[in-house]
Amino acid sequence: MSFKHTVIIGVGAIGASFAHSIKRLGLSERVSGYGRTENVLIKAKDRGIIDDYGLNIKELCQDADLVVLTSPIVTFIDIVKSFAGYLKKGAIVTDAGSVKGSLVYDIEEIMPEGIHFVGVHPMAGTEQSGIDASKPSLFEGATVIITPTENTNIDALNMIKELWTKIGAKIKILTPEQHDEIISSISHLPHVIAYTLVNAVFDIGIDNMNYCSNGFLDTTRIAMSSPQMWKDIFLCNKDNILKHIEVFQKNLDTLKNCLENENTEQLLQNLTHAQKLRKDLYKGVKGIS
Amino acid sequence: MSFKHTVIIGVGAIGASFAHSIKRLGLSERVSGYGRTENVLIKAKDRGIIDDYGLNIKELCQDADLVVLTSPIVTFIDIVKSFAGYLKKGAIVTDAGSVKGSLVYDIEEIMPEGIHFVGVHPMAGTEQSGIDASKPSLFEGATVIITPTENTNIDALNMIKELWTKIGAKIKILTPEQHDEIISSISHLPHVIAYTLVNAVFDIGIDNMNYCSNGFLDTTRIAMSSPQMWKDIFLCNKDNILKHIEVFQKNLDTLKNCLENENTEQLLQNLTHAQKLRKDLYKGVKGIS
Image (tube, each protein chain N blue to C red):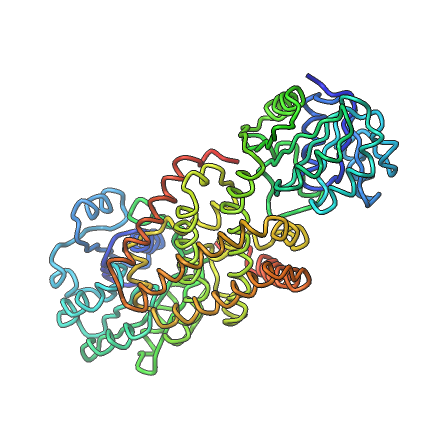
């Protein structure tokens, strides 16, 4: 399996890593970049991450057989609308968005007859963003969630599965709804908590941060992630995240009550429960990249 | 400066690392270990971490000029009472406890005339505990907080400062009260949050953890820390931690309200504020071990 012409929309950490890895593995004869900032596209071309780039999305996409949306999720609908009508029959549109929900169905509705959309969320990336944070090995060993619906074309789904498998990812299949619920708990909620912890320590006393060691640094690493991107993710997955914040608040209240009442037994049980879960997880996933 | 005979009470991750580093640097002619479990003491001797060990604390301490408490903080008072009366004049007692508060004053009260206590908190260690987690380089570049009071003997304070400086630590001086307030915010609160986040994701759905990637793993790493030890720390520093949990809760409510009301501007400000603080911290402390 190889694509003839792949267009990457948004050549940031994820887009550039994807472009670079499919080029390196020979999974697309031609890889083009599209984005808002020409300097980034020039950099990507100079570094051999893409073969070429275009500033006119319609022209660029008209002979593409694969278009990959890696720009901010809030841009997806407008961007897809701008090029969908120009794609040739059989082309596949896919994405790398962190929220699926209604986006998958909205994009499916825009797709003309014979053009197929397959939703994908590669669980990779760090707190850094932009082309300088990209690397062709980013997805090796990473979990990649594909979110088909009852409308998804089976051949397109299989091609996307095969593509990510060749890139070295571990594929999981979820509905868009399952995806958003799960990712809210293990990615979006931790981001909410990390940003909040930094702001809380600021309120307590900014100078206290001079004393921090690895515990605080690790717990808040993901608070260095792009506020623009995470604001969009939080709003797009608002209902799940609000529900999960409440579960967190309930658990925090329980621990707080144990402390207030010096309920030593329950406090110990509470911490032991968390420690065991987290240690089991360590054993289970320590190979994750 | 060199001590003739140092006794380490509790040969775990911190105690064994300390013993090993002062032996390696020749800062004590003889280093003895004391603990509840003879097997651990035998292991420590076999590995060259200590020179010898004893099971009778009074005999072991009677010619010591330095005694270092690295056992759980809740054991300090009883242990100090058991050997304090047998120490020779001029001996120094110090510790490695994560909470200072009343402990420092309580131990000062137990000290006989001519024996000096100096409170110390080395900010090192990981989520692992026990002798197998020890290493002689643990304190190189680490921040070590010394918490003198108005009763602290200046010569003893200076010797402890010099000792930790030779070990390679960066010394900071705080009152016991300042220490507990600061450490509550940047260490105890993050532990509360990490344990709580794991328990919250369990409540949401334990299978979700199969999808977790580095974000969740880093944010919750310290939830693998010893529940026994952290239960004690939380209870000993209860008032500060409860106050700081409330600041966290207020910040979480603010973020939650932004989401509920789709207050995009305030949400973005909130995340940007945290990101900037955390990035500045990265620049400031990335050299911390």
